[in-house]
Length: 180
Image 1 (tube, helix red, strand yellow):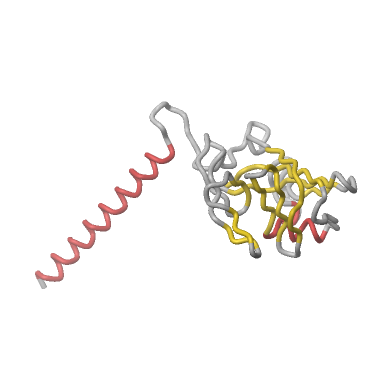
Image 2: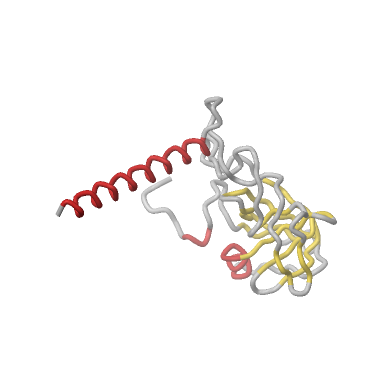
């Protein structure tokens, strides 16, 4: 009986220490000590290595997009007073790979922007017509270390496709009931 009590107390103590440590770590990551809150989103960071059908996107090349990561100054989808993501980014480049699952845009010799997942799927459902070699402008924001495309503009055809609204909400998610 005494053994069960001691083990129970040890278990509760260990759990308490782990929770306390998690709270301390979270507080340390979200405040810098200067009274300002900082996000852990990505800015001008380095991209993770992604294999791209026979080509490799170098791990040391600056990267943005789905799968990119880095460190930035509070760029993780913080909303301004109007409810918009704080920093909308604009990337102009050339589509180097277009398929049903992704659009890869070369912004410069060492910088690629990847549009994929549900955002690209939605753009295709809306009739996005981008071919390899087309000049494209991708406008969006960084959320959770990933570039989220807000709109695509094909400079060759003039076609524009909106993917997120001005507040950063995905257009495929449907309307908001009972809210503005």
